[in-house]
Amino acid sequence: MIASLMMCLSVVLLLIGMLGGIVMGIQENFVLAPAHAHLNLVGGVLLFLFGLYYRLIPAAGRSTLAKAQGWLHMTGAILFPAGVALVVLKGTAFLIAPVLGSLIVVAAMALFVVIVFRTAQA
Ligand code: HEM
Image (cartoon, rainbow, N blue to C red; front, side):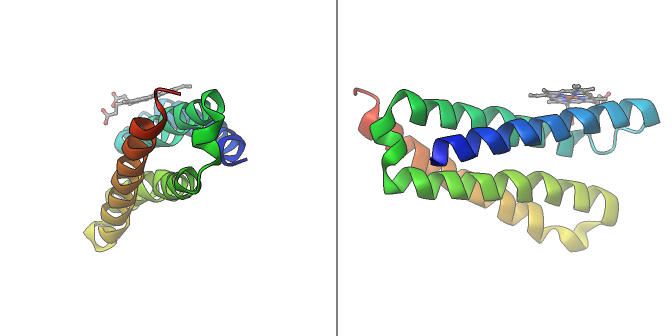
C-alpha cells in the first residue's frame, strides 16, 4: 500500500519536474534549476526506488518502519524542493522550509538504512 502510494506520487512529481524543466528552457531562466533537480531526484527517482524495494521485499514494505519512512520521504520530497524554490524566488526569510525539508529527507533515509540492513538478506 505504502509502496503504491510512493510510486504514484513519484511519477507525478517527476512529470511536474520535467514540465518545470521545459518551462525553464522556454523562458531561458534557470534560477529554479536546483529546485527542479531536487524534485526530480529526491521526489522522482528516490521515491520510486524506495517503492520498488518495498515491492521486491514485501515483508519490508509491510513494516511500520516502512510506512513511517514512506510518509517522511514523501513529505520531505515536496517540502525540500518547494523550499529551495521559495528561497530562490522570495529570499532567505523562507530558509526554514528547505532546512526542515532536507532534515526530513535525511531522517527518512536513515530509516531506510535500518530497513535495508534488516531485510536485504530476505
Ligand atoms: C523533460 C525533461 C527535463 C527537462 C526539459 C530538463 C531541463 C533542465 C534545465 C533547463 C536545466 C537547467 C540547465 C542549466 O542550468 O543550464 C536542468 C538542470 C538539471 N536537471 Fe533537468 N530536465 C529534465 C529532466 C530531468 C530529470 C529526469 C532529472 C533527474 C532525474 C534532472 C536533473 C537535473 C539536474 C541534476 C540539473 C542540474 C541542476 C543545477 O545545476 O542546479 N532533469 N534541467
